[in-house]
Image (cartoon, rainbow over all chains, first blue to last red; front, top):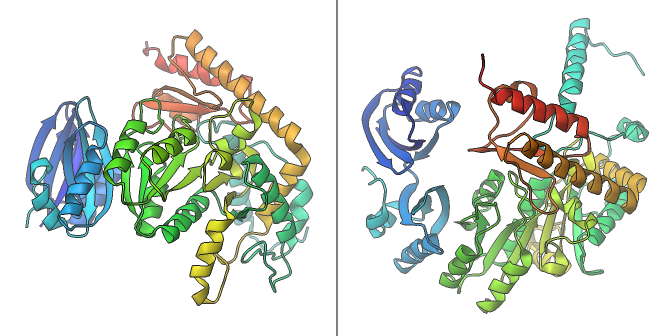
Length: 134
Length: 377
């Protein structure tokens, strides 16, 4: 079972649209968590057919984040992402990439890939949006 | 023309394709590809298998090439980008992405520990290139108008002072036409006393606009760029994607030395390279000349301003950056997508006023937009 995270706009019926697009491709959702953050929602899914789920979400215009990527939520201020990179560096971890996914009035949601994501998740516990499942 | 063995059905398919492309080309207003050109003088060169394999400034055993013409094209682009005399190098690429890949490759070779900083408004292909090249990277916030957020850049560079920054600057962002100010970026680097830094300028579209305006934003080699990528099929117009990349020669020489062990001083990304696209660019530059290019650019800018006025006259909040032919407006209604080739993203859309987008096309587009906004009876 693998985990997917999808950032969605806070629109009426969006969760139904998302689950329907997976159902029509025969993807079973084992677990689903939905969190609302200001103008958007974060949907965390565990699915049985991972690659098919990714394709279905992409085809329906959803942006899915795979479990190879960590998702962090930070205060929206200059250098916020760089400060996270520095924390990883201080812990002896090598940041490969860090991209902004969404910004609203006060927060930035970003994805990051590190040399050791499990260790990075431990270092960044306080800003992690989704705890990686083992 | 020698008759081919193509079946009537296949010939019909080609005829259908031709008609479809002909109809679409005039309504392509959302992508920066100039559809107005005539290269019929060059069609005869399609009789040959020509190839510009390798470095255009080195000799090659494959003599069916157009490297002499390629060098002349590069010399013109070096002049437009204010490259230091005799201190530049470059080649004709397969398009803007290869040019960006080359610039980032040079940067990564010079600074293997560097971190690439690029803004939120950067084209998605850059993230692909960075992943391909295993270059560490961090995204910088954008301002609402699409320019890089210089405060975020400064803070990022300050925190990572010990790491050489590789700045990927947009000289005309894809959606909003924003130009990242190279003078400001250089000033930040100097202010933080960062000894090693590299700036690559992605000037895909605006690289052939800014040389022909009176007050360009700081964007070229004279303003601190280390390499610049410009598309050939965008402002100049070409039937095949192509572009030009230029870099400071000292950088290229350094990486050429470092890869000498593979037995080739050639640092170009591709092996075989098109010999036809340099001819297209050469033909375009020679037939238009600097004065012709300036005329085209000034007409496009005037038409872009006309488009902003027409939108606003109908209560649609449109805007554009100085020296930009990209007119930004709220996301168009879905009905617009059926007739027009446009590229909306998030809550905005844009009209890119290329040479084939004349005032009649703008009027028709705005009229359709206004109609589509009206509630259906």
